[in-house]
Length: 165
Image (cartoon, rainbow, N blue to C red; front, side, top):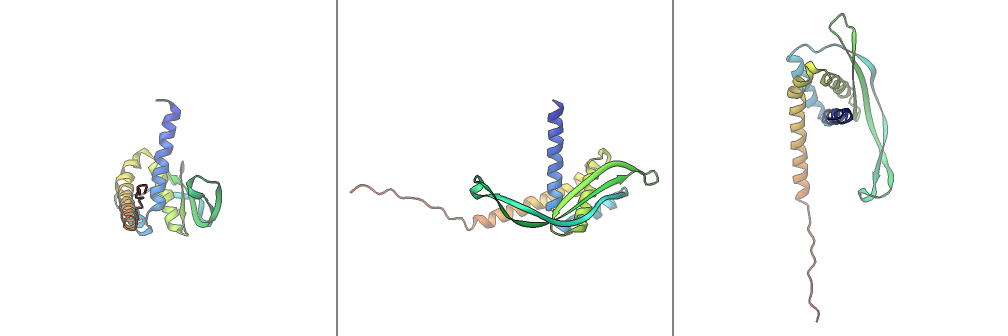
């Protein structure tokens, strides 16, 4: 496998876990983060960019294919952290980032820490099992429920062909 393909796969995997962390319900993320802390001492971290809220422009396309237009603004909170080594709080350089919709300061900080932990081989599988798998399952269940609710209102149109008189 080529090096660029491996990098693309790693980027896709990271994008998937960042999406899961960002879309998780705040209370579910809190509970998962607490369970992870119970399984072993979490490494310390330093804030590179403290959680801060701002606005981001949402762009859309008419019909999904038309010209882009500004739909509106949404509140976003971002955070960046760097993990510390066990040696007297020295920094090891593993950085984690998070962007979450809304003003969830704690949510953004926890997601950034989890992003950094997922990049460490020693923590990756533990975070996958304790945090990401349950959150992803909850997101999938929520999406299925929303799809089923929307399907109840589906209207199917058909045209009857009339014969020529």
